[in-house]
Image (cartoon, rainbow, N blue to C red; front, top):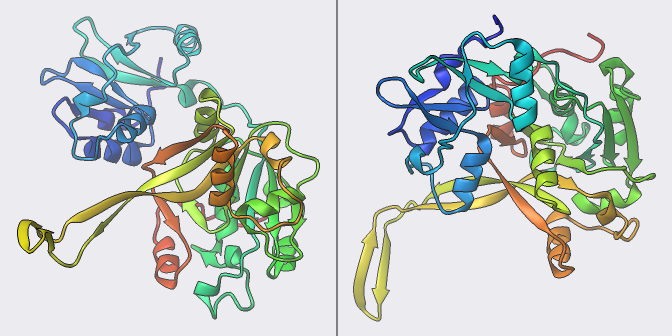
Length: 357
């Protein structure tokens, strides 16, 4: 077979590496696998996005060693295996990557599903919240809706749609309010992009969850909801797969946020100093503004009543519905401030084609 992806060797890490290095490999190669070897180049195991996400949720951090998350019983393929056999291995074991090894288990290549089989289209709908006023970006948003602000030559919203389209999504619903006619005039029914675009129009702002109550008819399966100002390398299809595999009613993408205190922190007990830490780093998970929702949840919403997504998740918890988190390590940017808008233009994962091209 001659369909081994270029740059596959960059996925290899020695067993003593850190989770941070594994995340860097996943981000830089886009091959969705880290191949872990010993010093002789023999396969120890593999690491996927899911392995890292589970490790982070179990209390590990980016400085932890990869041997805590490595999958040591990886499926491998001997050199010279036919395409049909590789596809059968992938289908049977429900995997997208298979390391190629020689007789001594030394890694000599990588089979990638996308390289030997075209990806299937996604029937799931994507809903994009594009109705906000973008007050933090005034005066730029006074005469232009925030999702239409240009980044690298085209609107933020178009970047989101094209990335999802390239992942198999073809049906989009845009929730619009502030200057929504400009969004409709630009995208129309989506024909120029080769997708289907529909609109729900908010008479007054309904929040990231309230706008879902306007969707009719309801989607037939789980659907993506994303804020219209989020630029990310997240794979939306993998997010939906994670949601389905965990039998969730709603899934929230979350992202680790680190901030350093500008002061030294003093610990006391009464007047006695018991400890001191110089400028400690705080690590918390934040809402990444991307979700998966089951249609049954939408049917519970009161029509045209304002509701934000975190509140909806809290209500579902009260109702004993299963809501889960999906930690992301992919590049992510909330384009809500002028400096972030400038930073977005410098990202190298954006698409530069324009509507109609």
